[in-house]
Image: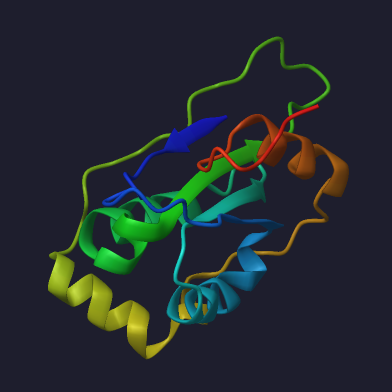
Length: 141
């Protein structure tokens, strides 16, 4: 599991964190949610080991686009294969295009960056969201 952090608190008010889970199929809905939600968003994204491209895309957006940098807290979840003994690192490569070109490309067609949909383990993602949160108002039992 990888955590991409952002500092959401700039004042003493406690924001409400939207905690959700998804697959890469719903990148367009994430874009819409970032536009409409004022507080931080904690997203558990389920991918397979071969689908690091969507993670790289979100990492690049997190570096380049203020709405991603300021709001998005990303948890990347992937399943071990039957013969894996430990989690392998997801490759994160240097950004291949300038921020302006990347954000322009993304804003024109966010769905262009999606990869094949995987069935997501809903309970697993919910458990991960419960372990990592950004507001003190959420109680973990």
